[in-house]
Amino acid sequence: MPCLSYGQTFVVLLEISGRFADTAAEIAKVRAKMKKSLDVAAKQRELMAREGFEKVNDVVMAAEKKQLDDALAAAAAANYERTIVQFEKMSIT
Image 1: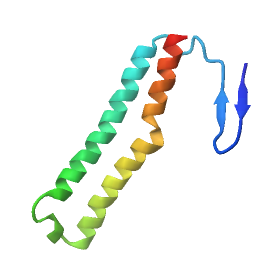
Image 2: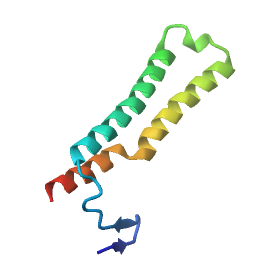
Image 3: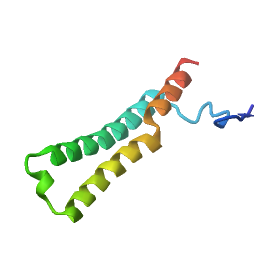
């Protein structure tokens, strides 16, 4: 039975029982995607923290900062933690 509530955020609940036979596998996929996004962000931070990085030209600096921002935005936009919690709730019920 679908349910819709509204306020500051929208919540849509749909009947999806049976669509995910193996919630543990789905959780593992989400965790892998989250790890990949966070690893990219960590590598960018490491690169930008290297000694002498502040001396690179502005174009390179901007490109590297954009890669970091994009990786962090992807991790935030995908909302991995919330997705994992939802799959965990599905496996309990």
